Length: 229
Image (cartoon, rainbow, N blue to C red):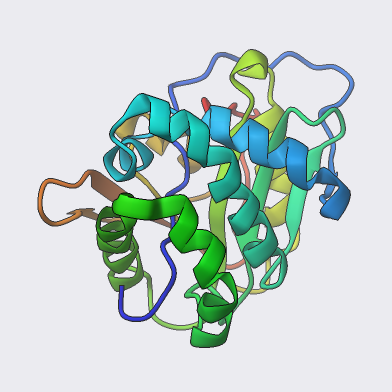
């Protein structure tokens, strides 16, 4: 991964139904007090994700390690960009700011111990995914939607889209970028102003990804969409 810590992809998603208006759809900045809850909800959201399943193919190991994995990412991404969680804790997004999409050496070293203990024998696969993600990032500065997830119990109600929209509201000055391993999510992201810019595969049997970019000042369609995660 060219010296960078592994990046899991934005979670797999399905084509969503229309959202149900209601309370709790607004998102707020996530703080350290949200770490445990957000880590657990992301672990549930990403359990069936193609890239996460490639990194942790054994379901029992995946279930045991994902909360720790996302706790590490919650801390790491919080040093590089904003984090958001919906008011009721149903969905969350982790962003990395302009110039911070790729994890630098100092950040990598700070997280090396916990990350190595969490990944264990999954390290080579995680590095393979991370290398491919880094290699397909666009040139120049952009806002990176690193992680977006919704508790499976609350899917289809607009919570995931609210967590995404909170970050996009701060990302009007530069493009926003993400990658996803699920083609069913492409219409969802089109609704948030993203356009497909590439399609690629992780080497050695890894998953296929789609790269998406939202132009600076891009607009979100009036109808909100919901994430599967």
